[in-house]
Length: 259
Image (cartoon, rainbow, N blue to C red):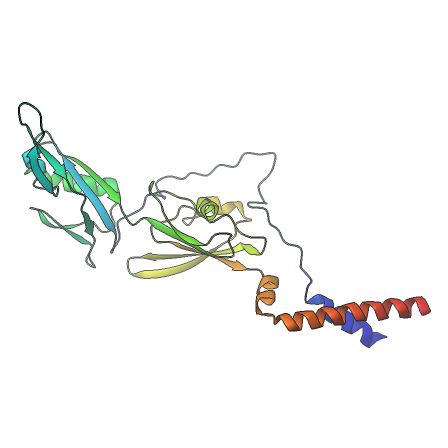
């Protein structure tokens, strides 16, 4: 009888699922507001291998041509005004953190925010262009979400600002098997790759430096153990265990009623 009961427990435990918390930030007080100072922690900084779009505009089209790739061509109006027709060109940040910019040459932008980079370039270009207006955009700002989500993929972020929750939303959110208490964020900065784990059941994630993602971050959602077991299981073994479980339950019930 004891052996039969042990067999029943062993066979059914394969399919057993422990109670899990699927609620994000479940420790938040439902009756109180929660706030955290975001500050400037979410400002992305220029890194090696970033691809930057840089445009310079001023009141002088000829001066603009010094720094924007394009061609001077007639506008077609009665005065045959010469206008600049720009062609988009991107600048790759090299291993030393420099871009090779027309006329000026090498400019080191590594570690700067966009605004800081604009201020630095403004100082350099003032020698050539009066009151230049400089615009910088990240062309390779993307994040990748893989693992136990509905739609794993890489996503280009045109706004250059995204939270881990928004990234999961783009990937269709986690499945029921995703470990919300153990989400990994892989990040590269200054030649160092780090892997940090977040508990999305915990409200402290909202103040984490990983709440706002940086360019090229990778989010990995680990599957719960039950899903991993199911993925590794041989279908024939699963069918066999199911049959044994059913038979064991039937025999157990018969013996109980016989007593």
